[in-house]
Length: 471
Image 1: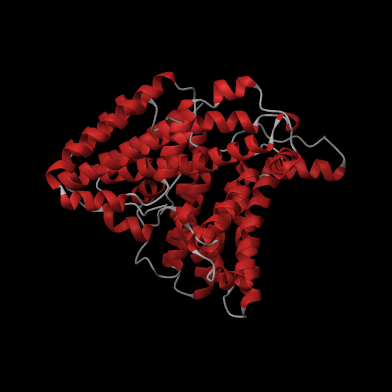
Image 2 (image 1 turned 90 degrees about the vertical axis):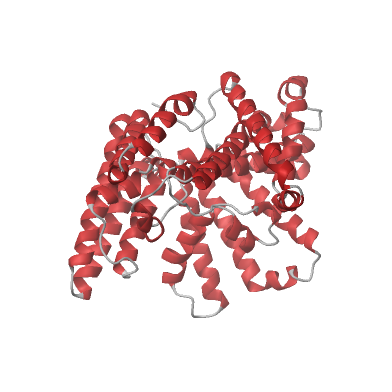
């Protein structure tokens, strides 16, 4: 079964209108319960029996949270925390890493006798596992005053805007918002605007660029000229940004419509001037989670070498969190190594360079890492790197690629994606300040055009799940 995507017509014209209307028509005290039922229904719609994994996560975190809160002595509190965190990680490891472990074990034993279980990774498991761990640690640290009730714990983990692929919300952020929420025109309008922008990012930019990048990454190395490899990498670099940030915009927009405010997850990462800055701008809620619940607990005293060690550990686990694959592990280590090199002195040298050179360095380094992220296997990634380095085909690309997959729509999407990856909103804010009577109707017209164009693309588009659904 496939999850019901935010871009699916069934979501846009059936689930969302019914749920959002029923939510605001319901008495205020019933809205949390209504939203919980709707969220579980949406998840069960796509996941079927695997919805039981989400219910198990809710039960684990509520039980452990109560145990942490009730324990009066340090040792029982710490024991309850360890059991709760270990239970979360065991659930994650069972469904995400067991097959990978068995594959490596068979390889090590030169055997194929151990059979991996026939199950799939429940959608969103990595995200709500991290949310559960943050909840337990915050309770242990006394950043939360009291454990959540079972319904509130369930809503915290299962709320449908963030359930599938984040942002990684914390109870310290969302808990105070579980009280009475009133329908107000401004947040409703802001939520709709944000949702439409995300819808356009996904359907008009990410999906259009994916057609070219998918075709290019699927080429065998002997058919992949260097210029085409770099073009495909550019397309994928922008595709993954607009795919993930588009989902995040839709999630934040839906939350605003429901009266919640989710944390931001992106802040123009491709204008970063170092890898460290990139991770302050890319997947911000994951970066903050890794910083607060992993990097700092490892200890920050001990000089630069200890900081480098921490970076390598954190990004090894960051890569593993993204997927049970050596490609993801190496992708994480690539970023961890670059961060370590910057920590050891490169950062000081970068500061002496002009800003455009610093941006170019970061963008090239990040893009090269995306090869590991996108390639299906490690040998495929090595072949693609060879093509980027000039060891690919010397022949021009086949005509079917140039004509069918790299046409005018690709170039238009590419130009719009490059422009949109820079903070153009400051220009629009200046225009709005100068021409307030004009910008309102102009914005409404532009958003309407984006929504209709994106909606039209859903009719002709093949199934393009959000990239981060598989994590």
